[in-house]
Length: 81
Image (cartoon, rainbow, N blue to C red; front, side, top):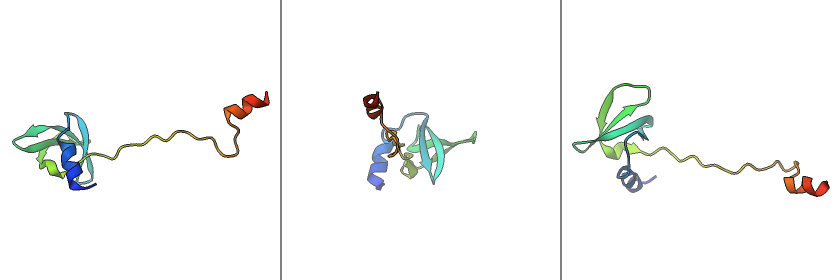
């Protein structure tokens, strides 16, 4: 990801959004005095970091389930009946 895309993404962060900071998972809480307030997962303390150091986690892509090549499809099973 280029830094311009990351900075643009930061502009649309909302409270409780998941982010990455230094490769660690964190939750974005809010902005204060130009700093992003985050909390690392599993930690109870919030801390201030420069917003440009935050990244959005990669999106999970859902691929449709495909039948194995040796398994008949529903259409083929229906045609056999």
